[in-house]
Image (cartoon, rainbow, N blue to C red; front, side, top):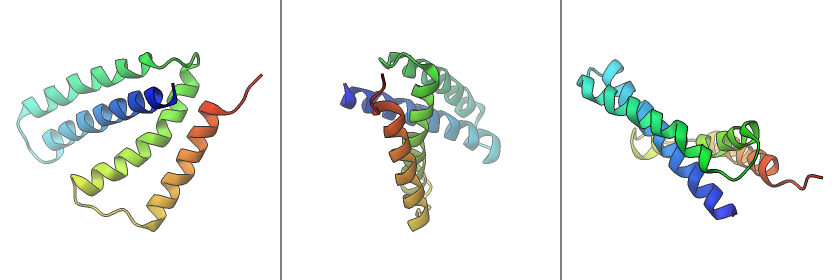
Amino acid sequence: MMLISILIFMIAGLAEIGGGYLIWLWLRESKPAWYGLIGALILIVYGIIPTFQKFPSFGRVYAAYGGLFIVLALLWGWLVDRRNPDLYDWIGAAICMIGASIILWAPRS
């Protein structure tokens, strides 16, 4: 179940970042309007993807997703925008992933 959860989070993260990036390109870098339209459609799909998680709590799912989103955003910036994350970016991302793991998989009664 853990691997499926991580996969769903990764797909959601790529959809959120990719959709937002297309809208960014349209509005900030004067790309054609269809960039924004496709970005908006991808963001709609992004909103649906996390509902496939098996966790019962909406808040916990989105809180934990935030940790992985941060890592994905840094990787996107590195690979797509050619902005190298520094040591503090990676330390912060690791702390967020630890927090996300605690939120999702801590034993609860």
